[in-house]
Length: 113
Length: 115
Image 1 (cartoon, chains in turn yellow, blue):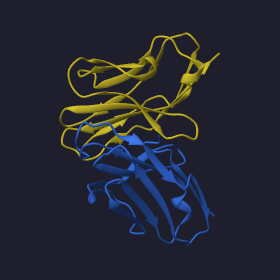
Image 2 (image 1 turned 120 degrees about the vertical axis):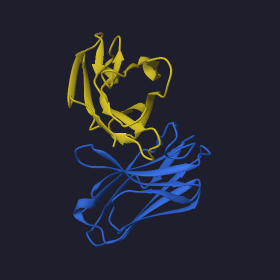
Image 3 (image 1 turned 90 degrees about the horizontal axis):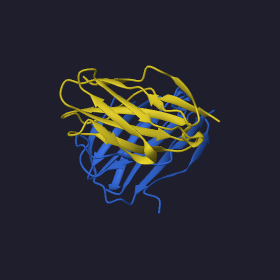
Image 4 (image 1 turned 180 degrees about the vertical axis):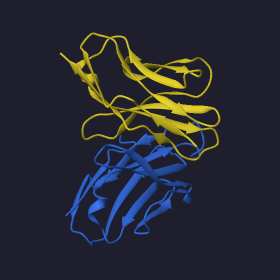
């Protein structure tokens, strides 16, 4: 069985400060991990994914995420937050061989000017 | 150019009606999906088609019936609409089959409100 947890419903950060959005997962095999962002009244936009290889994955808009197998985590990070980063962020996982992508409950990021 | 498009964007209807949502992708992808996002923003897969063939059918009422006339289109028909069907429905597509590592690309969503 696969599952993903985003322990924080809401994250607030000041503009210019680093941000982290947390994600932990549970799979039976090797995980495929994804981050998506949803702006108000918009569809989900792909940010980045981890399949294999380097644990640090770089994605769109300056975001990156670090895969940590021992902690079963895939936290999303950005060195300097922008007000325009304010949105809903979803972590998703697919277990090796599974057919579907399983999404977390989302974390609302608010960047304060 | 819009990669994954859905129509309509908003749909307001009465309980008991039948309605359809259309989805088209111009990415040349082989697999398409329907997701439901509830009022708490929880996103759950409903269906997946690969080359017009149904490959994922989660626990969804029989009132929901997907139809894929070709691999670029996946429509969702809903019979006898209920209040609990109110949600945002997202269409998505990916190059490979649902179990691959390919990224899924999402449409803008259709906000369905059942009165």
